[in-house]
Image (tube, rainbow, N blue to C red):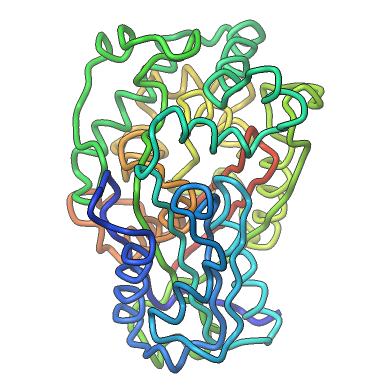
Length: 386
């Protein structure tokens, strides 16, 4: 395989934008990315769109050419990839694979979701489609209730507490205040986090990510060509995607995600690093318990120690290993089809020392972890200095 690098990145703000359509968000991110990578639309060989539910949210199908042609990208393969909340992480993985295999020299990946065009009830219904519709969803489950079961079981097995969950929310909201593109730039106290309106016991309002609109884009090229376009290429040292059962009740242990562990192992092996080498990470905190499970499955801490690690401050911006310096999905927002590529953009900004007020001191080796459903799909990517 050829070494591959990120040449350009671009994002919109994440938030609620009633006057913006899906395509306008995707085009804004794509144009910023091409400009950032000093590449014209005619130089793009292939286009991948990460999108979970555009047909349901906005009523538009055939989304990949719908977006790519608006960006001026024509006559090349344009493909939409859907993997629930890991849609654009998966699109990025396939873009990397295509460049590494020598099929293309310039691939643009855009992730986008326009969620606020529907009511909260309808959005919940659409998101539930990423679960097992013939079983758990038919029985009335939603993703808050599924992750509440994960949280409750984690509490039972390991002694995790609501204070541990709240520590994740407080930290990520504090980080989000520094992110000019975040949906909710609002610091919260431990008391607020613990006393938020109950959503699905033990998860409250501040344990749940936001319903957001937004888009993000990444341009990838062979590493040996990258410096022809940018003075700051970022190497993709390792990336892997793995899968597991869609239904939670088919998993032998719901306090761990096998797909996450497998993807992490493969990414570590490809990058020739281990968990201790990772300096900072953007992980998929769709719910606060998901961040705790993620840092355990990634090997940052032993199983059952994720809650105390968060509560101790070791995951804070100034801690031993900063987690979600961007604010994470919890504060930055979670336009599901854009989340995976958005994480890559945040990692690249840190490595390039272009993260502004979010900039970390130790920033040369970062990891992004993007989860789909209740662990059915996971993509892990490790990036470092070229």
